Amino acid sequence: MVNYAAILSTIVLGLAATTSAAPYKLEARDVSCMDNLPGDTLANINEAVECINYLASLGGQACEAYVGGTSFCRRGNTQITGLAKTGHVTTTSTCQEVAQGLGQVMDRCSRGDGTVRGQNEAWGNGDMLVDIRRVVQ
Image (cartoon, rainbow, N blue to C red):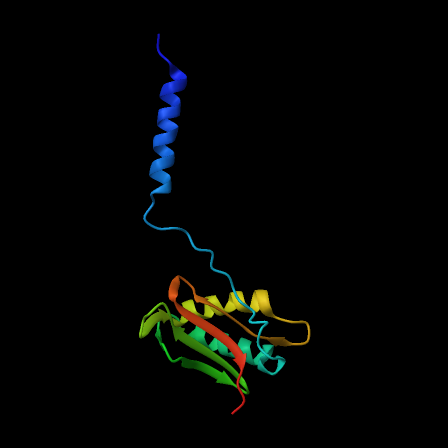
């Protein structure tokens, strides 16, 4: 007589072993509003929108970020910065992808008082962090 329970448990255990031995894991990537920073780093929403629209208008043009930070746009005291991360000296995304990542910051981190501050990865590029904040010259 065939013991179906034994066969089924062997298959389930085999699948569980295969699944747990995966060479990588999924990482949750969330927008950060950087609430740990002082209030004087909050940027003006209208200036941030101008920068994001400008970057989006560049479309497929390359936006290259360095590990020390690269200013992609500045309007008034609002600055959009790209940073290479995860051990890379430099990383590149299209300016459209940078704008898409910044759009998520706007969606999550915009405040009722007309200010915004936050960071996110460029769309589809986990090696580039894009940042909106107030930087006074």
